[in-house]
Length: 258
Image (cartoon, one colour):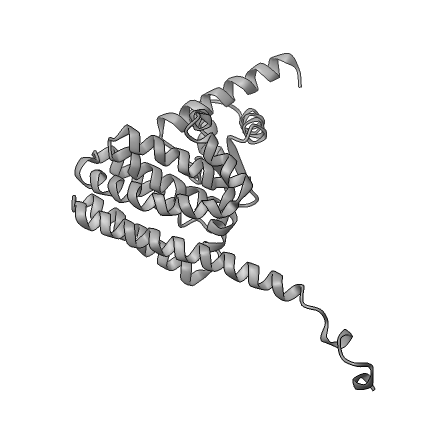
């Protein structure tokens, strides 16, 4: 790629970043179609493809064959602050500490749902709705990322910076410790349906301004998530133990092998 082409690619990539920010596109959400985006930016489709490839390599975007291009989850730099790092160390030593975080979310997110029901602006409600719709994606990875953004959008609508920053820290920690379990929830149809119904109930209560119902719906949802992830972990551990059992054919007395 020539220097001129490189500068053009960087400029288009910068404009795409701006578009993502201005339109409030969150993790798991679709970019406009290639044709629509090229027209909107006034560039050729080749230039657009080069810029998208650049953003994919940087981890900003994610491409699914036949499914379009999506915004990818981005870690926040602030999450490396001292309040989060000690918990990261604990999780590295013992992943079971993730359940302590899940328990703490009950207290935090019950409050964010309560305050969001009382304080969410029309723009914030629309953001919550878009994040909810993104959780319906067919791709478990994208759906689980949108799940995170759904909860964070509610925290943002609570208009409490302490609750929001704490939530961001929790999800940064949980990205690695329960990422596979969260994705698995979206691969099991009965669980997926329950998650969708629970998210809708939370959203509906917030939109109706019913703070207590929003809190109760959030608490019920988190209890379900906690129990489901724990069950997944127990099932995985049980399967691992079974594979370690000795082959009974090799443990029978010689006289029984005739």
